[in-house]
Image (cartoon, rainbow, N blue to C red; front, top):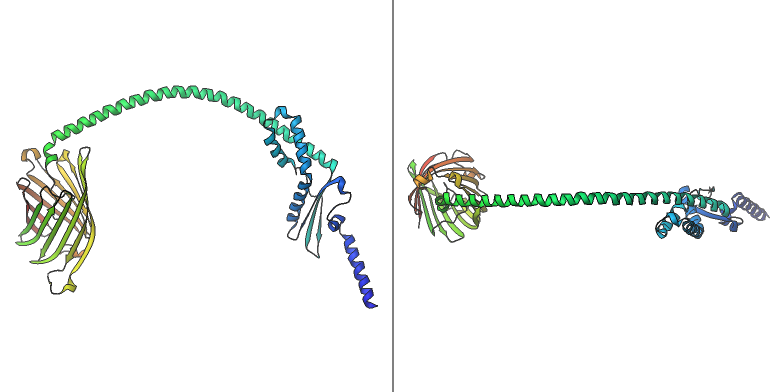
Length: 411
């Protein structure tokens, strides 16, 4: 008997709870639903999600009505509207839910569920729809009117621009013609100047650039196949360098031996390839790349562990300046960066027989510094051409210590 009473009480409670909820919540529809447009949204997440669902469902119900009414309104007002098909799609999207708001909401505490309802009688919605359609069509007509006026204004503007562009085109053609004439005159002057320079500095252009400066090689590969460089010192009397080089048209092979304290302490082997030699305007330029193998601490051949050696890529370049009868040279590898300048004073009178040489070295590896520990060394020299293109003699001051007498034989 007790269980029957409990069951009756549960049934009564459940019924009263159902009656406490709105009809549209319990039945997921509304009373007299044929007389209304409606949309119901349900969400266990939030009220906003339920509202969005109600708008979506309401939109689905009115979609056909909105489409047909929009098409009818556009047909009635087509005289002021261009491209009705495109405008119909846009207006449908714009007016479908304009003026529509949530009619009712409900929240179920037990199930934590949000319910939203949008409900409009058919006649009420049609009034809203017609009102919004009239507003949209007014805006559209005004926009079309402004667009047509803008098109006319653009056409007038384009006509004016065309006139201006035609005048500018004529002016541009005349200016380009003048510029072309100036370019031709400048090119003629440049060619004439180069021709003058080639003739005036003919002897300098024809004089071969020596591959050696003070103690480094530039991008040249020599005007003869063999070159031997011997370098004794005058003060104090000693011998510090010997180099032999063999040259082909584009390649150079050089072996160098260097003495310290009357012992051979350093050696290097350079292989270089000249990749460029031509004139840029009036300036002859040569560029070479190479590989240098070097060794030091080699005087004691019996203890091979003390011998240090290395291999490095090398880049060499030189450029000549005929106006000042000079050639600048550049060389870099892992040991040092060298820059040199060879200047021929009174070139025409002395026929290029005498030149002043200045070389500056920045040493990267301390093993190749001078004995005072300087990594920046400035070395001047005076070079004499004893036999043209065959024998050179140079007096120089090297390593902040030696006055040297260099013999350079080409054969």
